[in-house]
Amino acid sequence: MTAQARTAATEMLRLDGVTVSFGMPGTHPALDGVDLDVAAHEIVCVLGPSGSGKSTLLRVVAGLQHADAGAVLLEGRDQVGVPTHRRGVGLMFQDHQLFPQRDVAGNVAFGLRMRGSSRGEQQRTVTELLDLVGLPGAAGRAVASLSGGEQQRVALARALAPRPRLLMLDEPLGQLDRGLRERLVVELRRLFRELGTTVLAVTHDQGEAFALADRVVVMRDGRIAQSGSPLEVWQRPASAFVARFLGFDNVVEASVQGESAATPWGKVPVPDGTPDGACRLLVRPAGVRLTSAADGLPCTVVARTFRGTHVALLLQPASGPQVEAACPLHEAPETGDRVGISFAAEDVVVLGDAEE
Ligand code: ADP
Ligand code: MG
Picture (cartoon, rainbow, N blue to C red):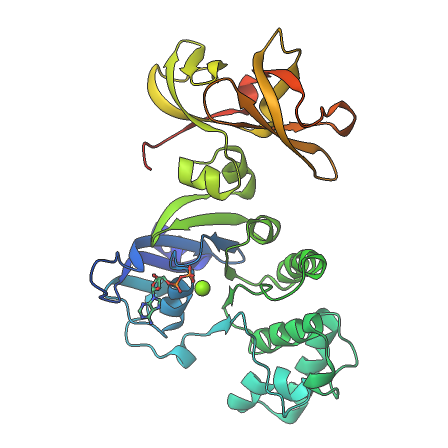
C-alpha cells in the first residue's frame, strides 16, 4: 500500500486552508485558513466561545456553506460541487427539531425512508437504534410525550440511522440541564465507541468537550488555537487565550532566568529546560500552596468557594494580580484571613504566545 493510499484509508475528513468570509466590513473571516484532520473512528470536539466559527465549520463540511478558499475532503475526495445529501454525513443541530406529527419510529426512520429503504429494514434499524440510545420500546410514542433528554436521544438515533460516515453534532447537549448532560455525554462516548462512529462535535462547553473527545480542538476567531488530547490541552494550554478559556486565570508576565522567573508575585519556579527571557506563565490553582503568612508571599483571602472536592480561594497579594488557589476542604482558611503562598514548579506552564 502506498503512503497516500494508507492516509486515505484512515483519514475520514480533511480541511485544507478553509476560509469563509461573510463579507461584513471590519470583521475577520468566520473561518480563516482552517486545517483540520479527523481520522476514521476518531471523536474530535471543537471547543470555542460563541462566534468563533464552530457552526460555520460544520456547515462547510456538510456542504451547507460555501468556502471562499480551501478544500474539504471526505475519505480523500474533494467535496467541491458535491451536494449535502451525497456527502454521507449526518448533522445534528442544537435545536434538534423532531417532526412533532410523527411518532418516535417515524422520526428515527426519516433518513432511511428518504433513501428508499424497505419497511423491514426501517423497522429493524429503528428497534436496534432505540435499544442503543436507551429507549427500547419507544417506537410508537408521540414526540410530545418525551422529556428533553429522551427527545435528544431520538434526535441522535435519527442522525445515526442512515449510518453516516461522519456524524457532526452542533452543541448536541446545549439545552439540557447539567446532570442529564453529564450522564448523556458518557453514554454518547460509549455508544460512538461501540459503533465505531467518526464524530466531529462542536460546543462552547469545555466539560462536554473534555468528556466526549479523543481530541479537542480549541478555536478562536475562526482559527485553531490548539489541538491535542484532552489531557494535553488541559495540562499544557498553548496560549493565554486557551488557558483563560479553560478557566485558568493565574496568568502573569514573567522574566525567566535559570530555574525561576521574576513575576508580579515574586519568584516563581519554572519547569526544567525553560529558556531564559520574557514569557507568560500560567500557575494552575493546584500549584498554589498555602504556607504561613511569614513564609510565603503574603495574601489576604478575598473569596472562598466550596467546589465539592476542594475549596477555590481567591487571594490578593500586596501587589500584583489576584491569585486563585485550590485547597483541600479541611485546610481552607476563611475570607479575610492572612495566608502565605508558594508555587509548585510542576503546576507552572510556560505559555507560548504574547497575544492580548
Ligand atoms: P459559533 O458557532 O462558534 O458561535 P458561527 O460559526 O455561528 O460561530 O459564527 C462565526 C462568525 O460568523 C460570527 O461572527 C457570526 O456572526 C458570523 N456568521 C455566521 N453565520 C453568518 C451568516 N449567515 N451571515 C453573516 N455572518 C455570519
Ligand atoms: Mg454555533
